Amino acid sequence: MLCGDFHESQLVKSGEAENIDASGGAVAAFLDSRNLLHEGLMDYIYGKEACIDTTDDQVELLKLASSYGLPNLTACLAAEWQASLDSASALKLLPHVWTHSECCNLAKSCEQQILGDFAQCVESEDFVHLTVGQLGSNLQRHDLHVAREETVLQGVFKWVSASTAERACHLELLLQNIDFPSMSVANLKRLSRFSQSAGASGPGLSRAVNDALRLHRKRQADGSSEKHQPKRRCLKHWCPDLGADGDSACQPVTPPVYGLGFCWHDGALYIAVLSSKRVLRCRPGESECQIVAGVGAAVNGHNQLHSPIDVAVSPSGDVFVLNMEARDRRSLLKFSNGHGEVLLQTPGLTRVDCSANGVLYVVDNDGTKVQRVDGSVLTPVLDSSELPEDQRFIASQLFVTSEETVYLSDLRGKRVLRFSPGSPQPTTVGNFQQEGAVRLAGLFVTESRKIYVADLARKRIWVLNEGETTSTQLDLALSDGVSPSDVMLQGNSMYFLHYDLDHPEKIKPVYRYRLPPELVLDTASATRGAQSAEDT
Image 1 (cartoon, rainbow, N blue to C red):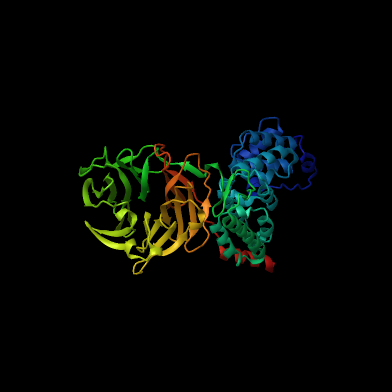
Image 2: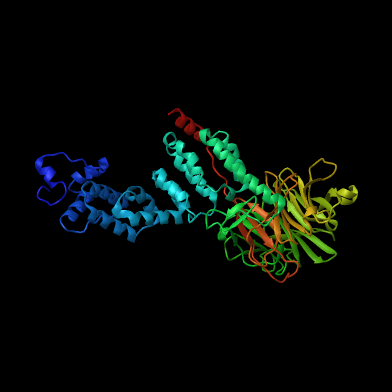
């Protein structure tokens, strides 16, 4: 080494000390003649190509090259990285190449990789090694690519929580780069509660969140065509309540089907397909569906379906099908363990649903009566003819909760009704009388009593919280000709079935809309971090 023509040779010969700006592992590696770093550096110094395989070792070699004043080696490493750069290596490299003039183009390429795959980068352990300047630079960009703005905020919280004592002081500044109106109302409400215990950053966060909530409410209340323009170019669609999403948020997940009713059981959709006289079991995303009843099903006993109009599945897997043999002749069929049977026959059956407790309900008498099915016996639950005039209904859809509370889409009153066990009459929990021409159909109610209802006339889905006077028309950026007739939520997805009153011959698949992910907020750690920053 003393004979070589390189930066430190004169210092070494004269006995002067020279510090190497590298980790202890790199120094030890350099001193170990069998190590690749040592070999790579020596190869380069004496005119050979430095060959280092792993990114970690290449970074250590970059540190040595910087300490030894070898700009050509630095440029050589940068060129090699540039040729094989991906988001994982970009995230690892950026903190090290940021200040090297020889790596200016590489640093820009690293930023582009991170911008294009931000969600994946947030999941990486190397994400927290970005400097506050590097993170802030990415957050400012309009070309940062994410499925939801919530991902960007989640990344900020992850970065801060990696070293809360040192980084909590940067939180308020980083939050100024978050596009809060692009988030869902549900997540904004979570943030509003979180801001109360977020220390010094709390007031600023609270103001930004409240401004975003007011924008959502204003759009819900006035129904104007003016929408929020998302900061990220990839988020092309915005609507109140759900916020902003990209083109891929709504996708077909089954083959085209012509059906009026569907349900969910054990990870699959069960669809009453009117045109093919079958009930299909379809796992979202799979191209082939299983026939569970009707033409082509391996069923003993009764298996003749004329026009299946609705389906329900019990927790134990029994399948119940409403079958219309003629306009005035309908039956409820049961399929269990490969055997089919007729449970009952009555002319006015229109809908069927099964609660999480296995209790079966039907809408009877052409929408004016709800009955519970006990074996082959019908027990009245709610009869429109026995109610006051302003409470009478014609139900187009039925939904039953685990508490055996019954919800109905009421065609007559343009409203959603709730009937709780023991109540003398139903309660209006959603009113659409001021929305003009609506035709309420499919209905779903979440555990938090958020109501989703399909509107065949508007070809849209409405959403409202139970008891609220204002409903929101969801803009799901559906393709032309798609008309949601039934709606259902499972996990983080909304599914809806298509049926077009004007063009029933046009069949479409079941569509899935990815709902906004729930923000994970660690209030305790945020408080500790903010307090630590204030104390220091």
